[in-house]
Image 1 (cartoon, helix red, strand yellow):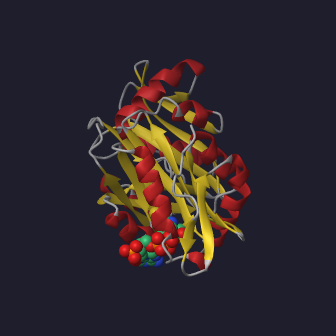
Image 2 (tube, rainbow, N blue to C red):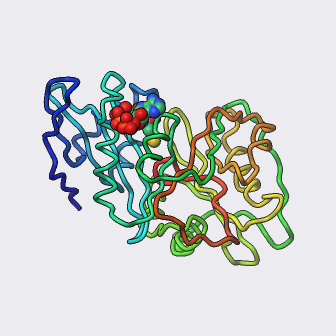
Length: 298
Ligand SMILES: CC(C)(COP(=O)(O)OP(=O)(O)OC[C@H]1O[C@@H](n2cnc3c(N)ncnc32)[C@H](O)[C@@H]1OP(=O)(O)O)[C@@H](O)C(=O)NCCC(=O)NCCS
């Protein structure tokens, strides 16, 4: 898909030069990585490659090169997530971020749009019709104590098999309210997985992959329960296998895993606002996404 920008060549009154807005291509990955490093995000070039492989978006550029990016990931016909919205620190507060976000909104039309908004992005998103729907807590660390979590009778953890993919897509889609048909196969190219099995039926799973300075656990999908024990068992599996490694997990505040993660030695290091435009999403209340895949793709 090619995103068109009919307003290329917008003048920037603060720089007395022309800023061009055009579609993001794979040739922009190095520039995108330089921007994310400049705002102290931990993404590797490989993390950008994955984001670009499954998403589309825009860059802002002038004579000095790329000065801003914003990407989107479509999930079916009804929804999309937005992210990697970055403007070079020395070029911020001059309207570039707003223009990039407006281009994405125009391109995506009436879909339900989701974004994890930083404090800097929150007011901009609010001005463009996004409303807060909750908070994500980011936990990470290396000095954790992997816990033992017991499962209800008849339930066990087992390795994922190739035949599980359709069921993973179904569970991930129901839990998030987003069509995960394209995301799951792409994720499985770069992630390892563990399944939660109840009497031969796959009822949950958790993926684990390289990201930033270490590894990330997510998505974690499991049936809802008051003590979140199944989600805890899935997370504990990956912690036990990776004791002492740097691990990150981003969990919705409303599921109450934060104090448990803190107790394990994975401190809560940051929070980010979940924001939605044109909601709601058709998520299944019986299933929960206890940890997101990433702040970009939810
Ligand atoms: C968020 C970000 C992309 C905004 O880009 P920008 O080019 O500076 O934004 P704009 O100049 O277009 O500002 C748009 C609006 O956001 C508001 N805004 C911009 N930066 C802000 C900040 N640091 N804090 C609070 N509000 C801010 C402005 O008031 C502006 O409102 P206005 O258009 O009514 O005047 C940029 O600050 C950035 O790259 N931050 C670091 C990465 C990040 O946090 N990304 C956001 C993820 S959602």
